[in-house]
Image (cartoon, rainbow, N blue to C red; front, side, top):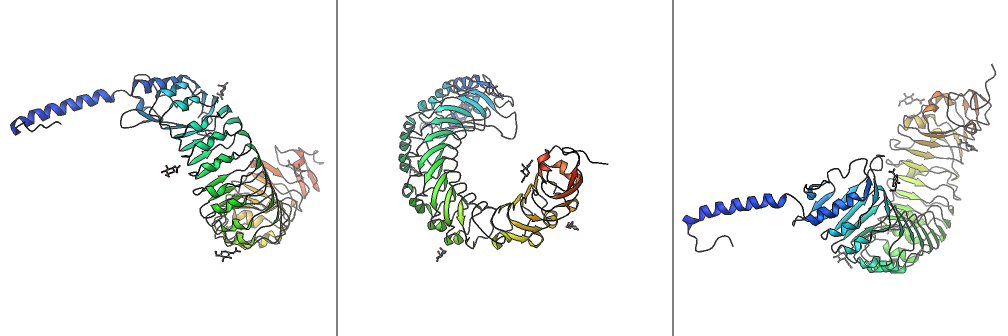
Length: 484
Ligand SMILES: *[C@@H]1O[C@H](CO)[C@@H](O)[C@H](O)[C@H]1NC(C)=O
Ligand SMILES: *[C@@H]1O[C@H](CO)[C@@H](O)[C@H](O)[C@H]1NC(C)=O
Ligand SMILES: *[C@@H]1O[C@H](CO)[C@@H](O)[C@H](O)[C@H]1NC(C)=O
Ligand SMILES: *[C@@H]1O[C@H](CO)[C@@H](O)[C@H](O)[C@H]1NC(C)=O
Ligand SMILES: *[C@@H]1O[C@H](CO)[C@@H](O)[C@H](O)[C@H]1NC(C)=O
């Protein structure tokens, strides 16, 4: 287009110069500001925000190039394609208050809306999403949106991901959700959603992640998993789901990595086929009413890092696991009589959390020599028949945060206990602990040494009397004063 054949080489040079200067000048003009509609839509969004204490939107000023505003990116045509604003949960000031302005619908090229952890955005489902023809990714997580998810949510057929997790949406999951067949991720966890899991979800064959956890969903878990060929994460925990673990979950065996069904009302046995989930690294079946034994096939779960079967009615024998390194294990409050801490636990070099409360453990703490203690955060051996002293163990666990051994026969002089600097919670109640209460307890957040053989005056403490009662001769606040 620029070089016409009739131009001789002698004419070419000045023409080229002219072309180049025109192009450069033109570019400077067009990059000065983003499209006027995009800017107007974003400024309207900003005016819907009533508090922005950390200045997340400080760069959003009229007249400046909105493609350069924080949280905004533009495509080749200089039109806004994504809006991504992230709060930081650990920073108290890092939130936004207000509502999502309908004027965002002025941004026709928007393909992704990421409003994550902003905590205080309220109002109903943003219906403006229906007016954005290019929208593919919606993550509006951890805010205070409320009301029902609209019945026509299925009209957003282009969506590749939909997350409304961590809001206050109530009512049913609309059945039209079955039309969102492009979805790779559907996250509706931590809301107030009720009613059954819609059967139509089985149409979403592209799902790699389905999380509906922490709602009030009822009914059985639909037996529809044979239609999911890509699912890697399934989280249905913390609902009111009842019935058995459906048989079709077995079809997910080759690729499922994460399975969370805890805190429901599930009954029946743990199916044998779960042992075929060779890729599984997390399995949570805790707080249900599962009965029977843990299948022998579990021995084949060699990649399982996090296993939580606590608070069911499971009984012996517990299978010998072949896992190389368990990271967190909770078998507490079942009908197990393990006798000792399993070898595959003691030999793990990466374990950080162990809960074997009421697992029928009979041992002397001094005899337990975990291969590696470096990563240990939590150890709970409550309500077993554990004797001996935890002094050596706590001397080896430099980063321990919680240690619970209540309801055992632990016998040692508490003055000899070296507190890991990180220790926050210590429960030694209902044991045979003697000596004095060390001053180091003042650094803890939770303490219970009740019902032991401790003696002497209690160091200055914020803990209530119930943390100290039932000892031989402890005295001073919060117990009655010492007799001099
Ligand atoms: C959260 O938003 C509500 C309603 O917009 C407002 O009343 C409240 O003050 C906000 N909270 C904080 C901590 O700013
Ligand atoms: C599923 O995902 C693939 C790519 O991951 C995509 O090509 C396809 O269009 C998606 N939709 C359906 C219905 O399979
Ligand atoms: C473990 O897997 C192997 C090989 O896939 C199989 O032969 C064996 O029967 C399995 N063990 C159990 C207890 O299921
Ligand atoms: C704690 O461990 C250190 C070395 O790691 C050792 O010198 C010390 O004696 C131990 N203390 C107790 C009470 O076991
Ligand atoms: C301490 O433990 C006893 C018995 O285990 C319990 O009754 C009491 O409520 C506990 N107190 C505190 C402060 O945890």
